[in-house]
Length: 232
Image (cartoon, rainbow, N blue to C red; front, top):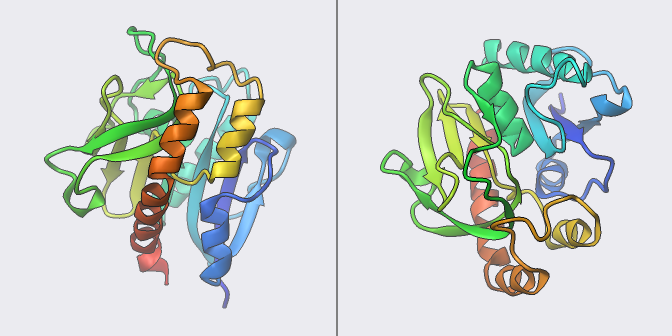
């Protein structure tokens, strides 16, 4: 039976990210759902191999403003209870922390990350991250670590860049799934981060992208191999 990966998106852009491509190349069905466009998340069927919650513009705590988030949290809880691999990226990581009882929101320092920024491993990172790495970022919200989480990475202004819960659940504040074309789309779109404190200029982003994009891609593909290993 071909295994299915539920990809919960919070935007209506092209499905050209590294996770979708990885799934298709590794023989998984990339089951892309957009609840904000009224897509149903379906059921927790036996063919479900993993669940990924992507980034987006919605606040993790705004379930009254955006009721579709309630359906996402319901699926998140079911997937965690079932022991499935769960990955949260940016908004998805904030949602994962919020679901587990931790705070998520805008930090007091007012800094933003828009571009490519260096993250560094914590003492507990192990083989998740063995040295500094420049990764794609697009956010100004953050989260506190949920109870029982293992802190994996930090950046200069955002202490919590990555965490792990158990062996199969990860939250990443950054966007390693985003290919260069995706960053170009962000640059052309008005996403509200350009010119904010801490945000990089387009020229700086392009220079860092040329220097570090290949390393980010290699790191993320190795991460995905480990993330999907229990489901292979």
